[in-house]
Image (cartoon, rainbow, N blue to C red; front, side, top):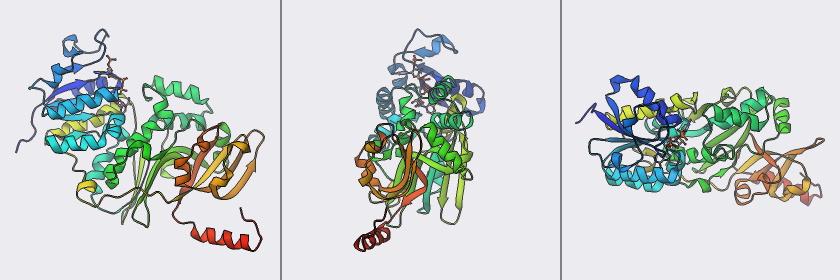
Length: 420
Ligand SMILES: NC(=O)c1ccc[n+]([C@@H]2O[C@H](COP(=O)([O-])OP(=O)(O)OC[C@H]3O[C@@H](n4cnc5c(N)ncnc54)[C@H](OP(=O)(O)O)[C@@H]3O)[C@@H](O)[C@H]2O)c1
């Protein structure tokens, strides 16, 4: 068996991640890996690396028989998919950081791995520096994963931290995140939750063997969170986080979503500030485990790319154990969520959508309520994210079964007592 082989790398992209990797590799001589060529988009730019390394012609890398590893860290998901496809078909192992490309092409990428037998690793695409994919694959290689709850987007977490701790305006906070290199080139990808749901798509595959397109997962970002919501959270000794959650239900299916959520100040996820990410895994016998680390930025992201490159020296591959060696789970569509909703005008909310409402509050500018609503209702409607309505999940929001409550409501109605 070939072990600790020499790696000749063709690098695509020399931006925040690519340049970070270039510098990190220079400081890791023991890795036995060298960058042979770097493909970028604009050949005229000044770069902090020797000019002869660069080309704008992707074939110079993809068709070079001496290059055995392609590292793809570009910000164009369509081009990235074409590059990864060609690289795998040309017999090269591939490391990628492009979460959008992976999330939107996962079935095809799985096929390509089966067809070519090459490795395709993408740890940095999930939580940058936190090794969550390999842990889900190797350590949680069983059916005992009860739930996984995570902060997977560094820039929204950075913005929320600034809203809570420095009372910054959301736009100012976004600018700071962009200046620090945490935010995506297109910030709506972060703010409106697309980046987080993209990551959740393939983390669900590694956690539960679920293959779904991002559009089938219920999600929203932090774009509607109001200063008034921050005040409510603080009055309850809670924080607001953009939480990606997956939880195994009694029926064997999985409830999964990515939504803003109130998090108790004592919760592990409340500890996650700024551009950090955090993952809380609950499993049989072990109870809770908490992973914490930088979720964005040049070196933290490069560190996971480096670790994937290192794993290629001994032919490491994802086995997709939950998909191929277990019975894969399915997403559940019949559960309910306890939500907080703040709004300006009662006409903008669909009261009938709630199974029941537990609290009503009326402030000067905004009103808010706490109620229970079905996943299906949220998935098939958009009123809750329009007109400045701000929907935030309650802590521990999943309700599997509301039949007892419905029975109680029915009997109260029969007795002529209105129950909200
Ligand atoms: N930044 C982070 O913290 C972070 C964390 C985890 C994952 N990621 C992911 O990593 C990837 C790169 O992110 P980044 O922040 O490094 O982006 P970036 O700073 O915007 O750099 C993008 C790089 O890609 C190059 N590029 C774009 N299209 C190309 C093409 N068709 N062929 C060759 N090169 C091309 C650009 O070339 P030019 O230099 O010529 O313009 C640039 O060097 C993205 O998929 C992102 O989602 C980023």
